[in-house]
Image (tube, rainbow, N blue to C red):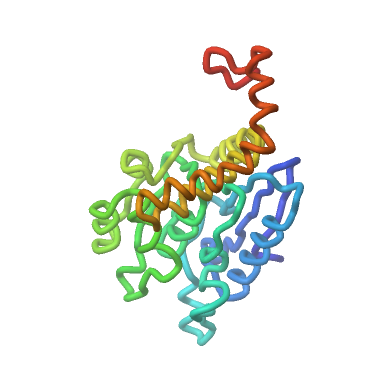
Length: 255
């Protein structure tokens, strides 16, 4: 039985992590399969938005420490894919994490790899690997401060304490909190919403946000313009025409 599945519903591709015997902990083979799945998603012209879902009530318990203890470590190298698979990638398309149960250690880092996080009300985030001397090397220290701010990130990183859904939403780690058992459905609905917008502007704005984090404000503003020019050339006229014909009046998103 494969530990990673790709399931498609129209323009939404859901990548499913499924290792119930290890609470969806990621071993080397699973990391490779996750990376390959996201590469396939990126290259698929019919896949407009994605969802990352952990099956069997758990998002991901991190790297498979039992496999490591048995002499089967995840890949750790300066180049190529990371120990959890896709977390070094910067995709051109949005991905929503559907977080149930625990998203801890490397599982937290996988959730941070996604653009948005839909979180079940009893879900738990945390740097649980703090207890075992396992460092964050797949995006935790790079992404968590950018999402929640340095002080809150250091609180999580240094203490390793659990952060539950209500606090996660308060600090910006959870974008939506939904009833238990409904994260995947809500995440796929959100991903589908994203596919309904003109994609050149959406993708350009998304990438501009990520790229701008590394730039002085003057350079970030120029990069924003550079990213936006393609949409100005190829999407703006159609959007202006729809607006002039009455679409979207009063802030409506349904026509």
